[in-house]
Every structure is written in C-alpha cells, then in structure tokens.
Length: 464
Image (cartoon, rainbow, N blue to C red; front, side, top):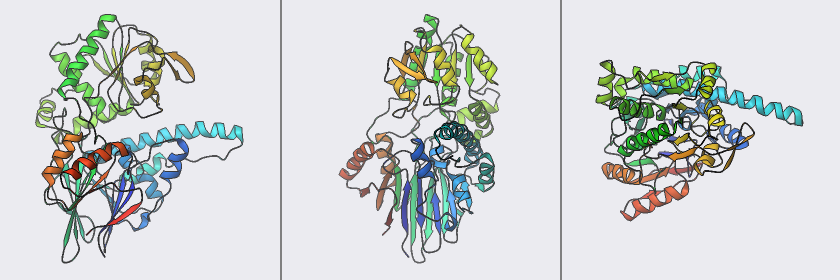
C-alpha cells in the first residue's frame, strides 16, 4: 500500500490544521486544530470527521495554538485512543490553551442557549468540557528536539525547532515501507528569524515531501528590530498626551514578546517608568511556563532568567490577579500600559478596557497581531468611527497604531529560503494560508522549477 496524505483541515484557509498520513501498517495524524469561524460553521466542522479517529495509531502535535491543538478533546470523545507526541513545553501550554478553549465554549453556549430557549430553538452542547481536556492531557507524551522516536510499527517521528512559539516543532516522519523509506516534513507553522527569546527555525534535511504553511506567502514583514522602535514611539507619544496605551494581545507568545520589549525599553530608560499591567489570567499562567521551560529559549534569554534577570519580572510590571483590580484600572487616570486578552478584541478583559477608554483621544490602541474579518479588532484597525462593545455604541476617538513587525510567522522570503534549505524535494504541499497568499507562493516556487501543489479540504493524495 502506498503512503497517502489526506488534508483534513487548514487547507486554503488558516484555521483548523489537521492532516492524516496513512501507510500499510499505520495512520498518523499531524495536528488536530480547532476550526475557528461563525458559530454554526464552528460546531458543524469541528464535529464532522472524514476519517475514523479510532484507527489513528499516533498523533503528533506541532505546537499549542488552538488552531492546531484545539480539537484534540473532540477526537478523544469520538474514540481517539492513541498517544499524542509533542515537546514538553507544548504539552504544558496546550493544557492551558485547551482549558481556556473549554471555558470560552461553555460561556458562549450559555449565551446561545439563553436565546435559543426564548426562541424555541434546539439547545446546543459544547464541543468539550474541562473534564475532556483532562483526558486529552493524559495522552500527551513529550519528546525532545532531535530524537528519532518510533511512534507506530513503521513510523518514526523527529521534532525540530520551528522557531514559531515556545516549544513549537517542525515534524519529520520517516515511514518504513519495506524496501523504501518515505520522509515527510511538516512545517506548519514556521517561525521567522531573529524573534525575541527564540532560536531561528531548524532546517531538516533529506526530505522527500514537505507540507508547508503559506500564511504570508505574498507578504514581506518589516524587520523585527522595528517593533522596539515603534513601541517606544507609541508609548512616549501617548505619555506626552497623558493617555493610556491599550494592547490587545494573544495570551501565548505575543504578550510575552511585548513584555520582553517593554523590559528592554525600561532598562535603557527609553520610556518613562509608568505602570505596565498584564490583565489576562491565561497570559499570567503561560508566562510562568516561559520561566520554567527556559531550555526552549535562545541562550541570551535563558541565561538572563537563570541569573535572576527575567524579562518577565521588573519593577513597574504587574500581573493583574482579579476582576476587581482589573476594573480599578479604568478608574485610574494615570498614564499606563494595559496588555489584555483577547487578541482580536472579541472576548476577555480587553473589551472592558476598550469600552472605558477608546472615546478618549489621549489614549492609544496598539494592535500587535492579526485581526480577522468581522472582528471588533478589525473594525478598530480600519478605524470605524463607531464600534459596538457589549451592544453599546462607542466613538473611536483614541489613536490606533498597527505594529505588524512582531509576526511569528515566516514571510514570503523566509518560506522560499526555508524550502531552498530542504532541497531536493519530490513535492511541496502548501497549506495554512488563504488562497490569495498561497497562490503567490505557489507561483514563486513553481517558477523556480519545483513541484508544488495546493490541496483541497479532504483531498487524499498518494505519494509516489
């Protein structure tokens, strides 16, 4: 039986990554991401599987972002019984991310069912609960980078540093097919060079096939060094107006990166020592894991932490403990920086801070991450004059500054450079990218004489 890849999700889009590799003796799942979209789509797609979870012999997880790990509890409910292999850092962070996902679903379903009951519509159920998350966590087995490990009867897995977030991996599968060996690389998501705290992505050699992300297949990022310069400018300009800087940030990685840069600016005395608040319980827990898993960071950061100079501990930084303290920040009129979840401004404590502060022209909303269409965050980026928060019309008078240079994804040049390091390759499959981004990368790589293909959802391809 030839080796096949079935592209289950994260295909021609950037959410819900999952791919099934099938050989004569085993089935291996690469990621089990949560599809994130409108409510009906979210429920239907995340509960429909075009494969049998009971037949999967191993699941290998690349990293702890919910669009890569978020549907693991659903698969376990549907009969997945295999071990889940990933790095130690990803295992620990994934537990927190899944618990948060379950909590958000429970809160959302309470709201939906309240409306459905009033309208006489069917009551909906959550995809999974905190109990299901605990069952998923028990199945996770950590692997170190670089160790070739037998995960099924005929498949070895090796994890390489992807340089995307803490503990993220490029997965390499070596499949023993008797007289032949098939070597598949999975670089979804791939980091960029020179990110704060992380080492650059490793480049695996000797691959036959490469499954590659294409999130920014038609974009060149601003240099990472610009992030610190722009952050300094935004903070100083806002302080001069007597305002607050509100930073909606993802709890995993982006929050820690912003803290890292603010710490450097404070040490250099490039900004005034104003209060800096991290107002996200999830971000607080994840930051603790960063200080624990120092071996996944670059030498400069890990050494600083070991010497008692953690970038996550400085005199004007405070992690907010409860809602009472969070609410008090809106009464406090001093200039300050508030970093809060969620990153796209759709839920979490950032909503309260926006509601209380965006009508004041002295304040700044600093956008440091991707904002999807139809989200409040996107409306703020587009500077809509009126935005709705908790059903209330608010005038957007605060300054809005977008800082894209902190992206943790490889851009077009990074992706092309990574592919060059992996050559020769029999074929490249482009996933995890909107069609317009992936199509440009496909054309670029094809013009270089490479065999490149953009699969469709649930398409199964037989490898040569």
